[in-house]
Length: 196
Image (cartoon, rainbow, N blue to C red; front, side):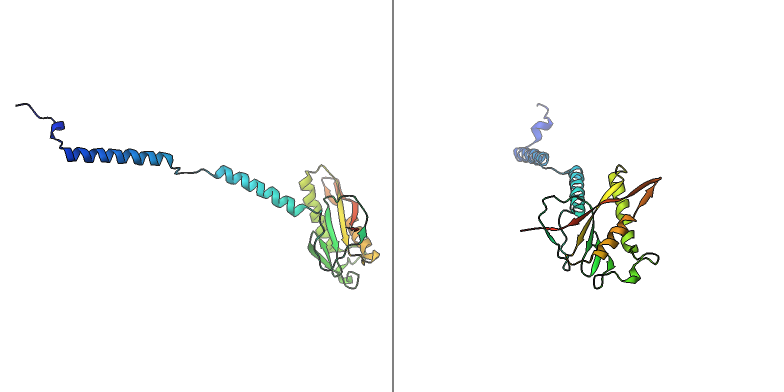
């Protein structure tokens, strides 16, 4: 009598179940190989974050359009010169703004005496502080390459000339000294509406 081996002892139903198990393992392995279990999106998020920062910066810094202030009607003009980026001072009928942030009140076409400097009626201290902050920000953004910056004044068409003089004088007195080098505003533009 011949000696039986382990192979001879496996019956047909057990062999069929073993074949089915192996087919299922192979099928499962193929499915797992095709499935992406881990998606590395860190690089994509980095790129999108940088794009978002640049878009937000360009939108927040852009000054080519006039703000929608209810108490401001710009005078008409036939100018064809495109606006440039500048620090924006808006003189509405009731408030004075720097980059859309209110800095002083206006009452009947004048800034109240309480909001003017004690030693000079030409200087508006809160306006000067805001302009100095904007100068510092522009110096950092320009990397110190420029020492003169542009100021854009948006004034209601009924703004008294004296108020324009106060704003211009305050801007002229707003100078930042960095390491012996003086930075300030040297160009003033009045923004107007283009005529029809």
